[in-house]
Image (tube, rainbow, N blue to C red; front, side, top):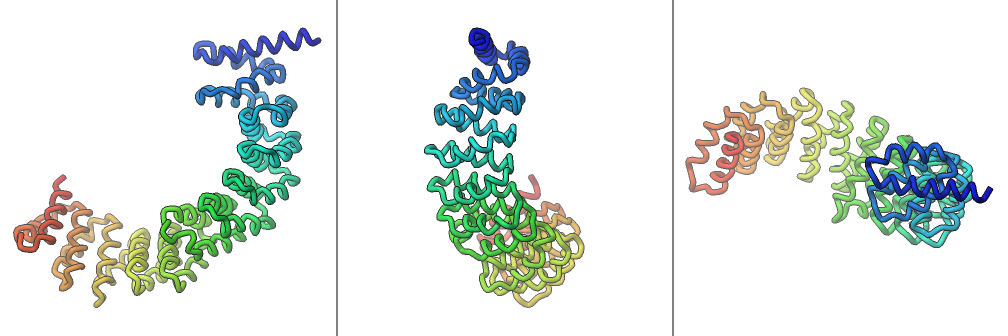
Amino acid sequence: MNWLTGSKHGEARKLVNQLKDVSKRERATGELLRLGAEGVPALIEALQTEDQNLLPLYQGILTRIGIAATPALTHSLRNDHPLIRARVAEVLAQTKDPKAVPALLQALHGEFYTVRARAARALGAIRAQEAVQPLIEALKDDELEVRIESVKALGQFNSPDIFDNMADLLLEDVEIEARQAAARALGETKHPQAIQYLMIALRDPFWWYEREQAAEVLLDAIAGMGGMVVDVLLEALNDSEMTVRRFAAKLLGRIGDTRAIQPLGMTLYDTHFEVGQAAAESLAGFGPTGLKVLAEALQHPEAWLRQHAIAGLTLSGDKRIVPVILDMLNDPEREVQKQAILSLGDLKDERALPALQAIAIDRRDQEMYKLARKAIEAIQE
């Protein structure tokens, strides 16, 4: 039978080569699928391609062949060049054949980190219980990519029993990218027991000190929990750390649960400017109820609070607030007047033009003149 197998392999190679020709691709794909397992070795050979346009095509056909390809794929995973092995593992992540688990577990402990990382991804996709402990151990891998793929894989099991292990990466890894992966993985579980770990991370300055952009991943994970996380965020509005209070106010606005309106109204009065600002911005998203809270704050004796209220009202985009903002041009405090001018430019309502033009006439105050001119230009665009 060797001559027959060889013949089929030769035929498969020709078909794989025809995949490079767009005009022959559809027919060649159909013939390779008809060959099934007999076409797999030639497709595996093709995985070493440097053409990133062809690679997904080869892998896609192998995936469509399905579990019939598993024996050849697992053999390749143990024996072929690391580049091919990593790409084979990506196919196994799509076919999700439990019979591939022993070979993937072996690959998870292999020499090449790219193969270990892809093996972890495939094990997570298959969700075989015997992979849990090896994946937990892989969280300590020296290579960042392996740790990231391992925590993502563990997240696929959605088991509170392993959240503590995932939290080791979230709270202790030296690389922010690994912590971000853990935050995403825990957040995607949507499990109430994951919240405690995400909130501990929120209070950890490693996440946000001089790297607030990186913290957005954590905020996304928390916000994704929706109503489940509202109570703990309301508690966080009273945290001793200003940044935590600010993040909590921001998140409550993103979630949009009406339980937050009154507490955010109180947070407007926070002594830290940025916390009050975050509260105002969040209140703007709660419709008429939130706008009412902001409008009331316009009468507060503290100038910075009136600034927050103007900025928040402006974010609503509701043109009905224009007369109210125009009144604030007469505020006794310069910073409040400046905020009113900026807001009128953002609202782009022509009713503001006469008042802004009156300010722009007087060039003695260059700062106010320039602000007014810029607002006028924005309205007239």
